Length: 337
Length: 299
Image 1 (cartoon, chains in turn green, purple):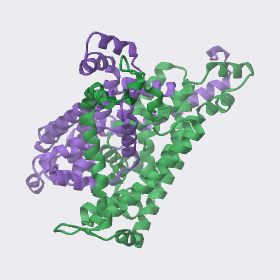
Image 2 (cartoon, each protein chain N blue to C red):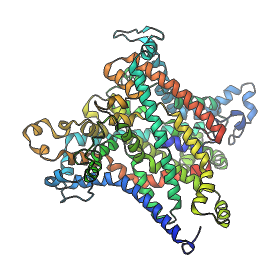
Image 3 (tube, rainbow over the protein chains, first blue to last red):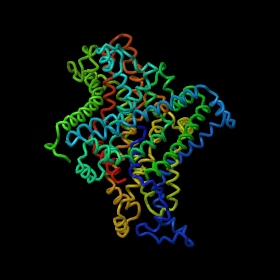
Image 4 (spheres, rainbow over the protein chains, first blue to last red):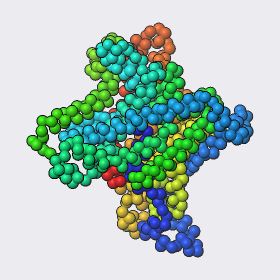
């Protein structure tokens, strides 16, 4: 649901190992013997041999340094009092104290956890069911048509998706309210109702990802040994018995990996989505950590406080991702990277 | 698999139920989009009564599309989106490929350290405020380069390419070295041609990522003239800033664009924004689907 494409494919490809130098050393195509690096003058020789590769990597390395490591340095602002005329003053944990003593922060944290929890409960299982259903469609052409249709929303931006849902849920001429009215239920403005807006987030996430996210499960299903199905058929297993005893056990590792991956993203709750559904009326129930940071920092100008909140999220998020990676590797052999 | 003839009536009913459920999902996915598409082509006089359920235009007219495509804000947004996305994709594909090539070489001194430093960036993101101040410090605020450079190289796509380059048979590389090719030539003449499918996939990843980018543009770019289409769309449809598209003069005097129903204008804007995605959608299906499937099969 919140995993990016790259992340999903990388997770699928990964054997979960950071390359170990000792394992691969000496395998370089036509290069120097492995021991040369340890010999006297090895450094110079290494430079002579490898400089073209470093030269090619230089733009990328520079990019990662500037765009990912300098911001870590900038984040020290969380421990400072920001002044209009530099330099800023070091205040230690004062910003965090202020943050943790503000009721809004806890409201925002609760919203984030509730929205993430709702998505895990109600969005996560949908693509699994879609994959199981798709697998039962024996007509390849029909399946292809269905797949082409349901993958599409994944490639639309949240601005577009929110625009589509605003039209869909419009109280005057949206499809949902028209059906509701025809059935005699009256109209509901789902986008300004604090009781329904979180469900709008859930449903729009399902709209966006139910199809595309089923692809990984479908791939896992196709990788199941056909002999297992044949054996089940010999035993007279029905369709549901085959799903229950062969298909589902076969995709449990994939389910586990993606579940843990999503747990690692628990504090994110998807800024890009929420910011496009937020309005003055519903803000109290879908204000999440990221929108709070955005508002405090870039609208209100409370830079230090916003940075502190962002850093809080970054640290807890890091702990969650690393823990989920380790758990996933232990349980399923596949990690996040 | 069981042949049709051996199916019991119950199984046939099951099959119909399964296909119907999936077709309902297709309907749920496509109806809202088709409704907006139909709305954007509906005769302007019939737009007010146009049902949210219909997917067929009520009297065909291209007024909405013509007016929007002639609109300076839309044209500028399209232009900005196209050139910013194109630049980002080029930088992204080349930067990622060059770095991945180096990092895929076994024995490269420091390889493990670089790998870990890249992984750290995936795990630890200090947030939007430090990013914002970095842009400010670099003097990139309110320039398109802040948006172009910010996600120029994705750690995930880098990892994908590293895995791909690691699979290149080393005999091919040895042969190139024996022919006297230096590492740059090997990269250009052996590695890149071999990696074409992988590079195409990465390029599509980047293209979708950058085309759909709106948040960084929204916070980094103050000048409306620099906005990509997504931000123009957001201002109009999400923030409901009617004047942005209709124009103050038109709105006050109820002339020009103000005479077109706002619903139809919004629908048209949404479709102009997703048109490029629709145009490359067949390619996306081909490359993304294959990439994800083969990746999972391998793992």
